[in-house]
Amino acid sequence: MHRASVLSGAGTGRACRTCAVLASAAGLEIVFGVFDRPYSPIDRKTDLGLTTWYAGVGREENTHLVWTYYVGAGAGKDINHQRFFNQTLEVDFRYGYYYTGITAEYYPWEVPAVPAAPSWEQRFRTSRPFLLAGFESAYVSAEGEGDYTVSGVNAYHDEQKIRDWLFSCLFGLGWALPLDDHWSINLSGDYKFHFYRPEEYNGWNVTTALRYRF
Image 1: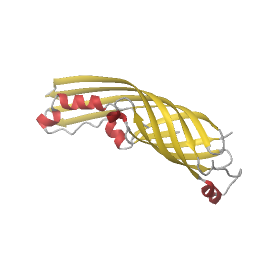
Image 2 (image 1 turned 180 degrees about the vertical axis):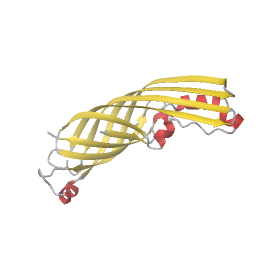
Image 3 (image 1 turned 90 degrees about the vertical axis):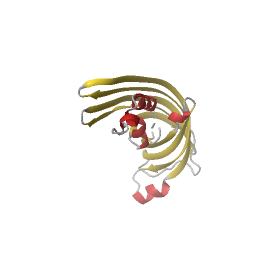
Image 4 (image 1 turned 45 degrees about the vertical axis):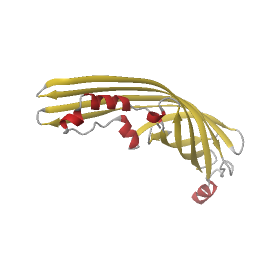
């Protein structure tokens, strides 16, 4: 199953504070005015490019309520290399996001059900919307390293690290499309509210899940 973070996580793990320190501490943009702002994990998340994968198990309590427990992770890096005459700027980021949580889905018009071999018309006619709510805990690991050199001589070097434990709640909407009497595809979007540094970590997530029902 796949989650994409628009904000923030699905989806959640970024080094925006590291980016701010590396990009501004040396005055790279203000003083020289020739380098673009380094592309950071927060930019990737805003561009819907910060993705994670997760797996979960759950239970259908009744025809209206389904809960799911899940674990997931995502990691990556962004490498920035810019050159202007004899000046070189390198700002690199590495990040990881590891999380676990539990969600509840409420189906106002019941969980969709179809026969073993339905037609596509039956699948779409029995698909149903649902309301989504949940809690999540996560660990963010991010590192950034920047170097500014002139004629091959290192004029400035900086390194920053972030290690954050996060706790959040989420609320959203989704749509369940049954494929047969066991398999279904669930699409959902949610907004995540973080208790720690909400101005940095709050944001939207888009989730795609392939679900099997026993």
